[in-house]
Length: 277
Image 1 (cartoon, rainbow, N blue to C red):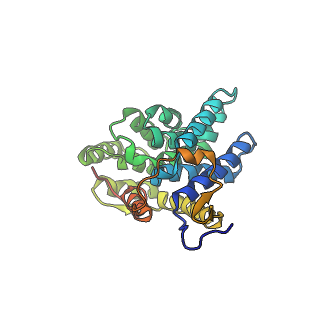
Image 2: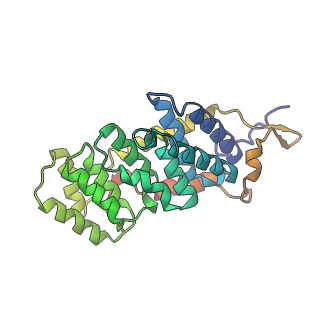
Image 3: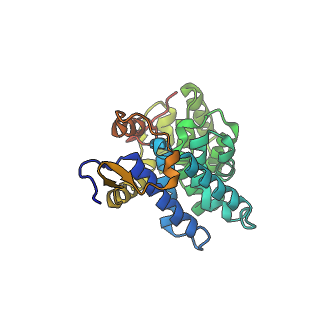
């Protein structure tokens, strides 16, 4: 029993699917540990990253497991106070996989959360699916305005996220220009980010890109360290039952090229943030 050399690039979707199982099992094992360890955020972020950029590696059975965990968490007595925070990345993952906006309700409700240590992870979670949000979502825009009105930490990036969601570019600039014209207080670095956006310029993506690069470093490290599936005479062995539900596309698909295109198309994966339609 040997691993076939040269046949398992890091982007082999069976390999990725097996690794997702490991990450989810570890995440579920430590779900109720307090305080939340940072590794939990990385585990959940890797699952979200895969769902957004390489959904072909996510099986139907794996999605059902995510739904069970998210629903179980909602029935915990502490969900309304602190429990909701533990599964925000799973909620975003489920939105990416099912396109059901219900999974965004918790994140949107806490987008202007008063506690910065909770508000920032919510913003990070929504950043994964910003290209599937809607600038015309009045609820999300209202929460972004609240962050600006209260000059919350990273309020400029809260607004930038909403401004990069799909929508009419002129309407976006008008919304931001009108808010800036109210003359409310902003710190200099916050105004230096928002004013050029309102004027049609781009600004360095100094926040979201760094976040995504940290997540991708974790993803690549986990993939590089994962053992490949085992082969005997060309037959794949030890595939978890969950992977048998995977609807594999034709072998000729270049998943590396597909992943690269999705990363390039994501508005918050760029070196600069700009307002586009």
